[in-house]
Image (cartoon, rainbow, N blue to C red; front, side, top):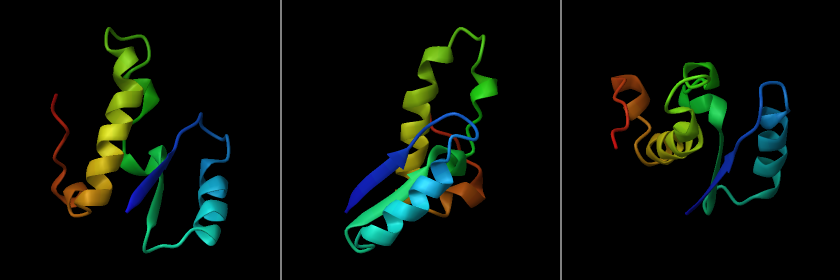
Length: 80
């Protein structure tokens, strides 16, 4: 299975792009997620000493979200 992670600023159309991609990809071979679905907010990173980790943290969360969907229910966070 291959993971497609869509990132972008708020209002850029990530959900629209995701919907279009999902229409064309085989659901048995691909999973598509936009970073809004992983629960990480850019404003929690903006202006901090760890602002540079935003993209990596989104990718980590997206991978775990897809591998273990119940993870969102448990509210467990990714650790370095």
